[in-house]
Structure formats: structure tokens, C-alpha cells
Image 1 (tube, rainbow, N blue to C red):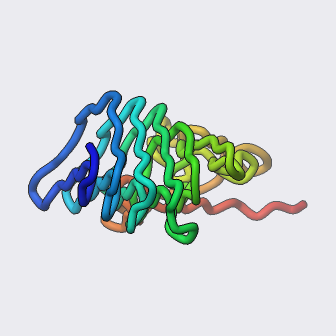
Image 2: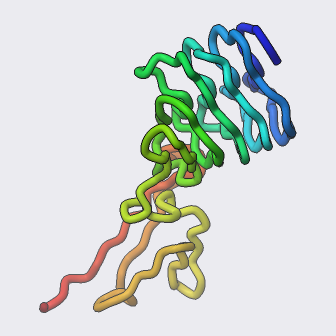
Length: 198
């Protein structure tokens, strides 16, 4: 795709979905007015994959990759992002409006990534022109949304989490109702620990 307003635009309108499309190889280059790739809702627009692709217009008005919406995510592996004339205040990648579980891996040449890395821990770009873009491994917990919580024989099971120590067996655990989700499949887990004498 060369010289366009937008390189690729995936839009899931209300009542529709844009899921599981696969793009392999290819280049988005030349003059791109708005963006190289836009993926957005409000409908489900997820698990669309882009492998071994280069997105390298000199600059874009809104950023090379825009992902918007709580039902939207992309998977990009082996992607190369270049923007030799990109405004340094505009992110090369913008993940917003509650989008989570994006997977982006490859090389980024200029500017930065704007995303909630707790919702998107698998955003990992190498760069030879600055600090690499990836979540801080010392400060990011796995499964912070408590996906997969189950109760087995009155014992709570939380993938990637373990309750241990004094009082762990008498800890009260309650999952917020699905009507109070922060984002789809993101619920609050309430733990009430017993008082201890120590």
C-alpha cells in the first residue's frame, strides 16, 4: 500500500465483527496522511494478525498504528516501524480506549509507544535509536485482571497467583459481579484477610 489516507483500516461497527484476518508480508509506505494501520470498534475487532510487515511512511498525522476500543486488539509479529520525519510528540503506536491483550513484537525506529502496559504486557519492540519498548519485568504482574478465577471445593484458584502465609486458608475471596466489569473480562477481586496476632 503506497500513498494513501490510511494504509489498512479495520472497523467493526455495532452489530458486526472483524475477527481473525491474517496479513502476511507486505509494506505500507509513501505518504500516509492519517495512519498506516487503524483497528477499532465499537464492535469486536480482534485477533487480526500481521506477520513480517513493514510500516514505514516518513510520518503520519495520528501515528503509524492506532488500536482503539475494549473489544479491539491486534497481533503483530516481526513488524518493522519506521518514521524518519515523524513528529517526536506523536507516538508511533497508540493503544487506547481500553484495548487490551495486544501482541506487538518487532523493531521500532522512531518516537515511542503509548499504551497501558498492564493491559498489554506483550508489547515488545526493539529499537536501535533509543531505549527498547517493553513492560518493566520487575513491576508488571501476570494476570492482573484475574482471568480464569475458579472455586474448587471452596478453594479459590487464580492463574499466576498464589495465596500463602498465615491465614491464607481462611481468607475470604469474592469476585465482583460481571455487571461491574472494568473492561470486558476484567473484574475486581476482593480479598478479606483475617487479623493475625503478629
